[in-house]
Image (cartoon, rainbow, N blue to C red; front, side, top):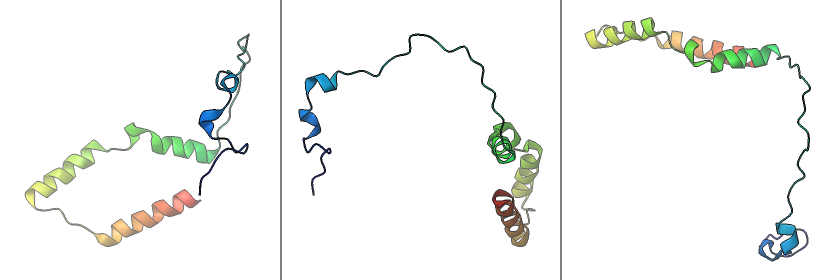
Length: 92
């Protein structure tokens, strides 16, 4: 099945005048101020996106030392509970 524009002409055969049309440009720049208020969800998403809040370097160092010494214990129940809580928070 061949898909063509609504006028049933292949795109390459459009009139040359159509190919050179430009969108109108604004002659004056707007100086109006705009105020935007973010919802609670948008603020939460912005905080989640903030890279500086993503990593607790002290905790990372503690985990690295535990791995290196062979003393790291993994609690799958705590991991599952944390994942479920994160999902609940995103859905709220």
